[in-house]
Image (cartoon, rainbow, N blue to C red; front, side, top):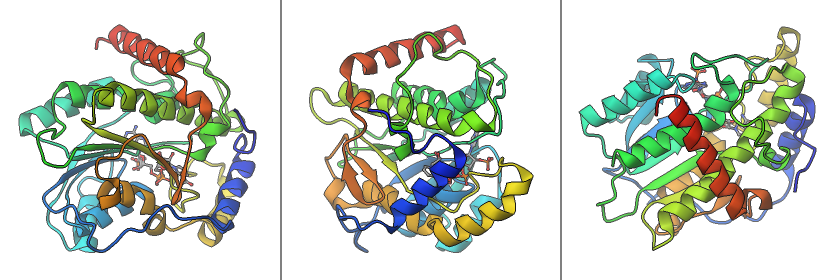
Length: 325
Ligand SMILES: NC(=O)c1ccc[n+]([C@@H]2O[C@H](COP(=O)([O-])OP(=O)(O)OC[C@H]3O[C@@H](n4cnc5c(N)ncnc54)[C@H](OP(=O)(O)O)[C@@H]3O)[C@@H](O)[C@H]2O)c1
């Protein structure tokens, strides 16, 4: 069921900040012994914000980190090495708004023989207005939803997930509670370029997160119908003091900086649900779960609908085919 609280920038920021102050039951506790030594972790959008903090903290826990980014190469990787004290950190270039870049990235994974134990699809944007990608799609649709479908599909089909390891591999999606506020999926406009300005950007952000969470549910059904092959998780990190509002109007930026600094969580605290899914022994052989901060919740019921999930997969595949596969 759709809720309205994440439909404009101010409402979304307030709702996110207020959530941090509500008393919640924690699902579990991450322990120092929850380590991922020897495991390969690929994280998109890890040169900044939540993804960057996750890269540092997972490197500290023994992971070999591949930072899949469009910018910050090599400086962000060097900083992750410095902060984590680990040298097992590398960066790969990918612009998730561009199919050519995604295809080149997948080719590079193949050439390097990468086997991924933990895949974290984390990149996301809140653009100031609609923008057309090189292939004519809308950029937020592409970065926040469709690139996740394409990258995950190509990684699975290319057998780049480490399915022969003793521990089942994991795919983790950084979603948002705002998925509950998106309107129902509109198949008439699906994948089609549409114009918007900042006023509608936050509402559309929730809509694309609904697509992402629906995809995560469908992926879980497809991968694990005859027993667990790859764990699939999604989460909302709560309000994070990151660069997510970098396209906000100039006059609002000083206010946002102060508000984010005062009321939003540091990325190094906000990454707890990501670390928990990635490392906790409690999450071994689990799948399909959604954490909001550290509270386990059901996703919006619309995202669990089997017919909608199948339709989303089919329409996404058709779109991918129309773009050359
Ligand atoms: N901040 C919050 O309050 C909040 C709340 C709920 C959920 N989230 C989610 O958390 C995730 C991380 O966001 P954040 O808050 O950490 O914001 P952030 O600091 O802006 O990080 C976003 C990351 O996504 C990357 N990205 C954007 N467009 C890309 C593209 N075309 N190709 C490749 N990478 C791209 C950015 O790279 P560049 O640096 O090159 O732009 C950056 O590394 C997002 O999925 C966001 O929706 C955030």
